[in-house]
Image 1 (cartoon, helix red, strand yellow):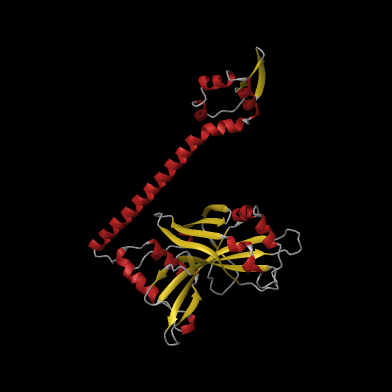
Image 2: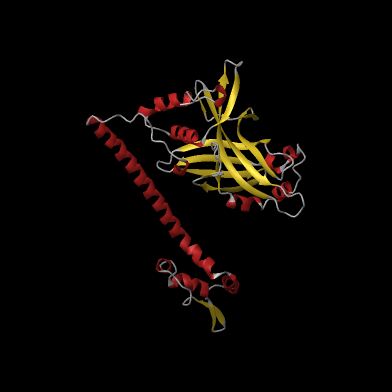
Length: 333
């Protein structure tokens, strides 16, 4: 605890009772402390009003940031060396007559970190890493086609936006209210990062596309899709990958609960990520058939997009190109 003492009619700061760590002491030598003692009356007043922990944190921050930066660089170097050794070991197995690995090692969602940035027309709301996402509704027996994130930090930031709170206080029974809502100003950018080698997949910048919930229910689901722009005009559905037969587009769903009573009970419930596969139905007139991929196929697609060994690349792409929607009644590979 900081104490004050009188010395010749002037106040000085005693730092003996401040618990200083050894690495901090080197920065706070007698000379620097003397500057505070010899300062003008105005400066001494500012110092007295400042919190002791703030003074110490200003000294500690550069050393801590340097320490964590060095840790990150060391971890990246270790990952890089491990990958190099794994590839060289593969050559040794081939020379010994072992089989060539033509199938890529499939990453799971737990192998990725998802970097999100959320903005509106007033600026940035929140950004950070979310990993790993957890599969939603584990009690369901039907195929899971989306993965959810922990939205506690995002919701804490969104609650600071009065327009978001006002939107959640609206009655969802108005079928067109979502088109004039605050959600129309939100932009959510997502990048998937594979932890093993820091390979990145830019999934896109998502904006509001449609409302999927029943208008009679307080819980509502809003669909966000990535946009591409041509001459500043938005064109929906930025493609992740286009093959000879299939096209793939990521999507986000923002799930909220409205509270039209005015009690402020509206909440952000979940944020989920998935991928839609579009396949042209030449036999049915050339229209696209759309199907949300099961999570296992999304993981395979992300593994391919993040990068696989060049010996396995063509085989993996052929496999992706043979996937067919259930509408064709033909099992995918």
